[in-house]
Image (tube, rainbow over all chains, first blue to last red; front, side):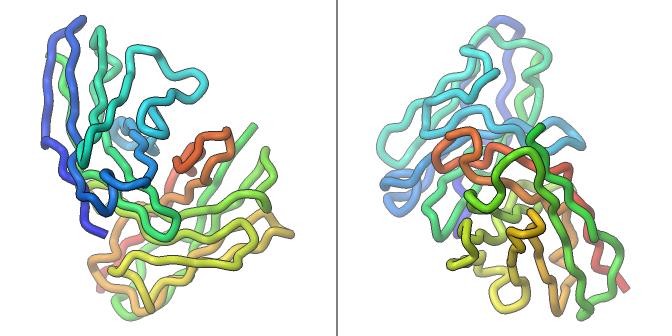
Amino acid sequence: QSALTQPASVSGSPGQSITISCTGTSSDVGSYNVVSWYQQHPGKAPKLMLYEGNKRPSGISNRFSGFKSGNTASLTISGLQAEDEADYYCCSYAGRSTSFGSGTKVTVL
Amino acid sequence: QVQLVESGGGVVQPGRSLRLSCAASGFSFRNYGMHWVRQAPGKGLEWVAVIWYDGSNKYYADSVKGRLTISRDNSKNTLYLQMNSLRAEDTAVYYCASHGVSGTTGAFDVWGQGTMVTVSS
């Protein structure tokens, strides 16, 4: 289960949009595997932000959106806010195996 | 209130054993697959193991296969992780997470607060 590739850091100013990429292979992200995204603030447990690539759980802001093309999934945060500053992880689930991304630190300038 | 609460973490010497527990409440535990995910200090998330809702199937990350064993007791709404032959690289916060409780297909929608395991002499 190799880690999916994410940029180490992404930054943006309040109100801007940022996109985090998550690159895998045809065996995970590019297959029928289900992609989800998690937000983690320091010292806290991860929180589900998107599932099935682009669906938001109840209570998650519509500022968070997802997309997948080929072996790469992406998370876009629109209207960046101070509270969005956190680590973000993508995840590819396949029943018998799961791979997380390497993680991206989002900084709000 | 849907909740997962881990316990059992601590400091243990290399080669020794430890058992983690995860108590579930607020949902029908017996109906959902459960996972363990860990995070080494300053590092990213690493999936450890999954167990089917009825315990019929269990799968592990290559890094823990043969040393860590996931199990569950649906009568007690509790998930376990038996950790044997512990190594320094097993040092991490261990989270239990449920799968799809809120209808979120293929995603970990409920997480515990985590329990720290430190393997050190």
